[in-house]
Structures are given as C-alpha cells and as structure tokens.
Image 1 (tube, rainbow, N blue to C red):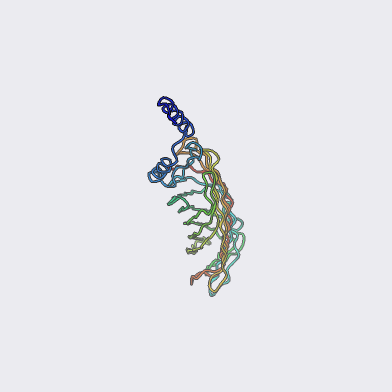
Image 2: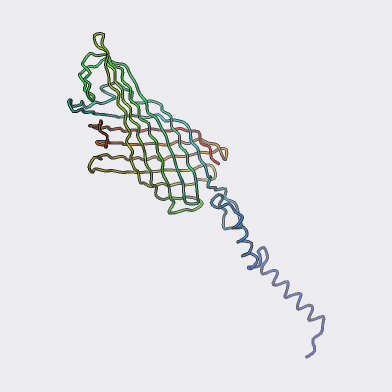
Amino acid sequence: MKINNNILLLTIILFLSSVSYSFGGDEIPENKKKNKVKNKENAPIGLTYKSGFKGKDDGFHDYFLTVQLGGFWAYNDASVKLNSPELEGTDIDLERDFDLSNNKFFPRADVIFRIGKRHQIAASFFSLSRKNSLVLDRTVSFGDTTFYVNSGLDAKFRLNSYGLDYRFSIIKTPLWEAGVLLGAKAFDVYARAEAHLNGFSYGVTKQYWAPVPLPGVHALVNLGKHVVLRGIGDYFQLNINDWDFKVWEVRPGIEIYPIENVGLSFYYHYLVADVNRVPEEDINGYFKYKISAVTGQLAVRF
C-alpha cells in the first residue's frame, strides 16, 4: 500500500505530541534518575530536609551546633554524712541544720553538636553554690571535727556538675527523632564549715569527685519551623565492692525560635544523686542531693 507523505508526517507529529504530554510537568525517567544522583552528591548531608512532593523545602534543618546559656531556679534537698576513723558523723540536712536556702538561681550551660545525621555529642555544666552564717542549735560532727551547740558557724556547700554524652537516633524523620544515649557526669562536691566559739575558730574543708556513667534515652520533635521539643532521661545504679551509688535524671523542655537562629529555651530538670560509697580514702559516709528546677536560657543554633 502506498502511504501519502503528508499523512505520514501528520501521524509522526501526533505521536510526538502524545509522548510529550504523557511526561508533562516531569522529567524523562532516565534524566530524573541522573539529576537525583547529582543533587544527592551536592546536597549537605543531614542539614536540610525536603518534602517528597515537588521538591518543597519544609524548613526543617539539622543544625550542627546549638548553644544554650542561662540559669535555673532550683529547689534543693540535700543531706550529707561524713565519718572519720575516730568519729561517727552526724546526719546533716543542709537546709534544716545549716539553714541553707532551698531555692536559688544558678548558672547553667548546654552545647549540642550534631556530628552526623543520626549522631550528636552533648555537653552540660551547672553550678549550685550556697552559703550561710548561723548559730548551731545542736552539736554536729562532720568528718573528724565536732561543732558544738551555740557555736557561730560559717557554712558553704557547692556542687558542680559536668556532663558529656553521645546520642544516637534509632528513628530519624524530618519531624522527629528518638534514640539512646551513653554519657557520664562528674560531680565536684565541696563542703566547708568554720566554727567560732569563745574566741576560738576551727573548721573543716572537704572536696571530692564522684564520676557516674549514665545510659539513657533522648528524643526531639519539630513543631513547625520555630518550635522544638527536646528531652532526655538517664539512669544508673551500681552497688559493688567500693562503689554504691544511684543517679537518675529527666530533662524535658521546649525551645522557641522567633528568629531562625536565636530563641529561648525552657526546661524542667529533675536530678537525684544518691552516693553512699566511692573509692576515696577520705570518704566514709554518704551524699544525697535532689534538685527540682525550671531552666530559662538564651538559645543560639547554626
């Protein structure tokens, strides 16, 4: 059969038009695959999320550095006992016996580094320092020193906490992530008491470190582009040979960023440290500290 050239040309034009229409608004699959590989190679890994629909940027970012500086108003409940080879120590309630304030504002700093899409390193520091001058209403023994009733007493107690942990996200999406953490805290405990009685002054000063490993869990939720929920919880207990202690902590909070990189963070912090025995030659007794605090900090992220 002989085909007219005009008919053949018209057929080819209609065919090409239908092919063009079938891929309208999209790329040919082969080119799309190549561009996807190219974009993946050029994109900063773990920094920006994009929606699977039309390449839209949802504005959720894994900021590689978050710094929070401020402080917290803490309720303290602390007790301590320190024995010596010659003397049985007194159970001392720092708030009741030494009239140290339960509530006070203390400094705190937190830094979070995101070193990979699922990996973070976090560091923290806070300092609790309280002091008071009073007249003792009972006799108190601390270490190898006895402070007698009606003595004038200058008392100071300080707890510095240094924390460092590694966080791994088992689940990771643009909107939320959750996983485990492995970290440690080091408590620097300092206590000083100086008495004045009948023109004489005497006292005692003790300082020791209590390092504590802390495994736990962590989570983060993005509530829009400007609000982040973040929280951690950890717990560890050990009772073996020269070690007898228990530490647990929870810290949930919210971060609000009216400006993308600058905002405010508010956290609730609950910490229990119950140290009965650590391998120190001059430590024989216990140290118990409970903190319930609300934290307010300036937050900066990059």
